[in-house]
Length: 87
Image (tube, rainbow, N blue to C red):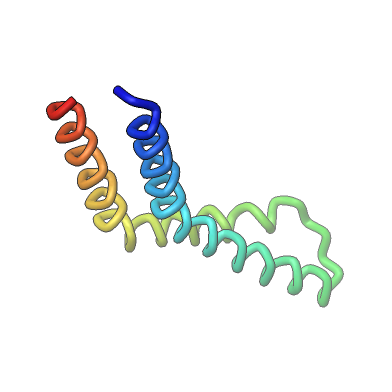
């Protein structure tokens, strides 16, 4: 295995990780921002109020995008096995 191939595999792995995590991270960011704005406007400083909406939103996003994430990971894994078979 040459260094270029190893770097390419690592680059594709990082790209796959970012693509799979992006929907959940974006939703958590938006929900956290909305809850923070709500807390600032109402002056409610309850620490647990920030966690429950984020957990629910990320879970719903995972249910929506779960099949897409599995497809992306499967395509990456099959491509990785094809590369290992040719080396």
